[in-house]
Length: 391
Image (cartoon, rainbow, N blue to C red; front, side, top):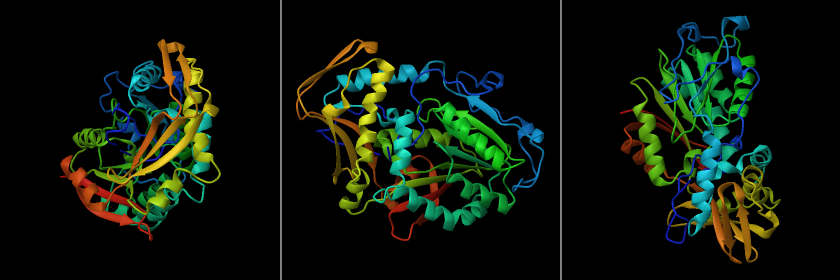
């Protein structure tokens, strides 16, 4: 759900995809209006080629233009059936582990996405507001320093905060194209179409991709600014973060930049409240992962037989969300031929959200081959935004 990383009493470190990207779709047919007319990406997910017709040396800056001048394109980097098979694999591994664990990317069916949007509006949940405040203050500087023609947003979701960057890049006179990247095709294309409609003349290419296994970046002729916002990187375990950053670095060229949002270490009471709000919205969001398994795998989880748990691990400096069984129970998951016993009081981890310090962010970036050149926080020091370049 939110952002990050865990010790001996924790579930085994099975792969977790970036969570807190609020638009992860459940497995199933991933079709969108007009999808049959759109080109598919190569199955090996090499960085999708960027047709020259989609690039322009004239910055659009919301200037009037005929929509026929450019087109919304979709590049697909995920093999057929990838999400369905990934869910089966994650459920089989996580529900068989000791302790049990489920990756947070499976929170996000339609209900989960709606619940997360509610979470971002809660008084207790500060990260969205804090990051937006940084972008409002620093977007102009980011655009001036990056001088990028293409904005690539990983985990784009609804691409709401993206507009602050797009506006500043347009004002800077460099903006030519926008590439939102997400694993949920339907939500991704919806967001891309909204941006396409709001910025006449802007070339928009939506890339359906998974950060860990099938990361695809467009091959553009000019500089690219790759943004990974929301603190989502915190949902990755340390080893996964290192692998992701190294993979991203290998795909960047001199002149490209990387904008990373990271939630910062702070008062544990503030952190726990952000993941255990008084209204119970986060609790409902956490339990929704059980409903996703019920719908997709034919499982018979009773969400009411579990309670939401959020705790701060001071040693690892991350928040954990768990589901605690309220009774001895047996759950069956027919799609993967699994019978899963839960003891009363047994806990299953559903998310980690690592919190960072500026020195630690710089060190992790440096280890992957980046050099952090800029660092911003909100006025209360709750959230950090860093700009880095290939070293």
